[in-house]
Structure formats: structure tokens, C-alpha cells
Length: 209
Image 1: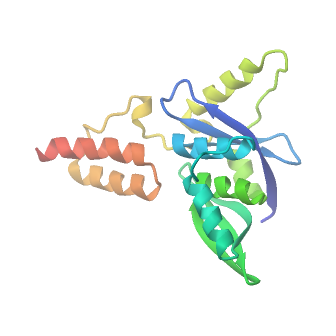
Image 2: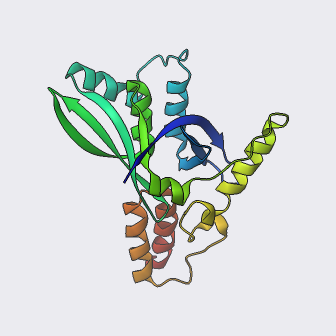
């Protein structure tokens, strides 16, 4: 499978999903965008890394990781977004120490936050971009149009493979059996969808009262 190099276009806040941020990656030699929904903390960390002039008074978690890695001569060589399953992106950090290469599994937002700090390139596979990449129409006279179009993408789960089952779209878990809820909880945790997991846990707690 061929790799496609990506660059970071920026971070957009969803007006329709409370607390949701979208990291927008550009196809370097193409026009497609790869939107990835990330949390507020990760969005802040990536934004700070993008704004070179902003220096936090104390190191953030990703800054601490970089300081730790540099102390032990570990270099992040590249980041690869290598899998997309049920709307969840999976990434690997390719590291090197003493000319020995190691591959470390990571959340995509963490991997990109570190790639920025190490000036490491970001890649994905062509089949992932074919599946989840989108075209955003640009309008230099009205940049708000870009934001609105992106927000429409974020509010439509089917657009880039988000799980259909979500309280964001009015879904409730009251009709599920306790066994089904526990299975959904395990799936949400394995996919690192902690917001969904919390809502399922709330429903389970109601049943156990």
C-alpha cells in the first residue's frame, strides 16, 4: 500500500457538537482533506505546537514526552495513520534510538502532537484517504463558508465513517438490554470514545439502582 504525505491545515471547532474539535489534514500532493475529531486538550496541545511563538510556562504532556525522549536520544522519525475502523483512526509513531527503529501504537491526536514537536512527517495510506478524505470547496471571499461546510461534515456521521450510534444524534440507550449495554461499553472503550462510554455507563448505573 502506498503512503500519502499529509500536512496540517488547522483546527476547527464544531458549532453543532459541543466540545468537538476537528484536526484538518491536507493531502500534500492533492486536494483532499482528512478531518479527525479530537478532544479539547489535544486540540490545545496541537494549536500551541503550531503557534511557534506561544511558550507555556510549564511543559505540557507532549512537551514532557519530547524532553524525556531527547534526554535518552530517542527521535520520532515519522507518524503513520495506518488504520480506520468504525470511524476510529489508529496511528503509529516510528522512533529511532541507537539506529534501532521501534514502532509505538498511539492515538492519532497524540501522535500528531508529537510529530509537530519533532518536525516529523505525517503519512497515511492511500486506501484510508480514499475512504475518509473529503473535498472542501474554498471561497477566499467568504472563509466562513469553509467553516460551515466543515461543520456540516462533522454533524453528519456517515460523511467520514463515525459510528452511527451516538447520543449526539438523539440516540438513547434505554431500549438496550444490560448485556447489550455492557458490550457497547466495551466497544466504546476499545475505540477510545470515552464520551460515549460515559453515557453508556450512566444508563447502566440507572439499571443497577
